[in-house]
Amino acid sequence: MGRDLINGIPAHVLFVHAVVVLVPLTALALILCAGLPSVMRRFGLALPALALVSLISVPLTTNAGEWLERHVNRSALVRQHTELGDELLPWAIGLFLVTMGVWWSYRRTDRQTADAGSTGAVATPLRIAAATLSLIVGLGAGVQVYRIGDSGAKAAWQNGYSATANPGRR
Image 1 (tube, rainbow, N blue to C red):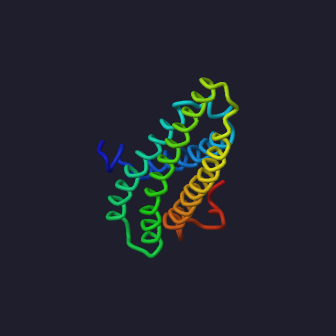
Image 2: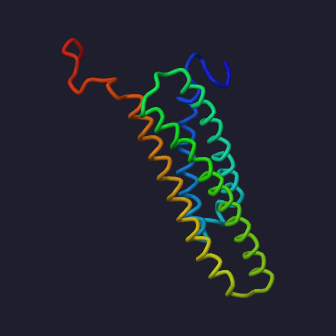
Image 3: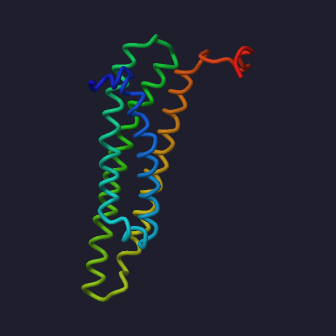
């Protein structure tokens, strides 16, 4: 078992499942936490932890994908998938940074509000900005994951199946 093969299966094929689940899940959690303080209070430190695991999964999957790319037939679809995959890391970094910013700002704002007993007049513009930025980065990351997955499925399955069932099988 190595970083490139796991039980004889290319690691990319397995690692990709982490990215496909974690990045959109992190994006959704970020958007909810940025928009709803009650959700942020419940998530707490789990939000940046989730974003960190998502971030780590991206280069692991990309590196395993580069190994796999050298072991499959070259095609325009494989090249497109590889290029799209390389574009996910900046989105994952952005997702992590915005998540850290949202977590830190909510933590700071909640402390100041509790200490001062104020209603948090400064917190409202900050939360609107955080929610807007979270929506942009979250949607961008989610769309990029979709684009990569779609191109990967096309690269893997093009001409790899028949639209009609094999008459000898039930």
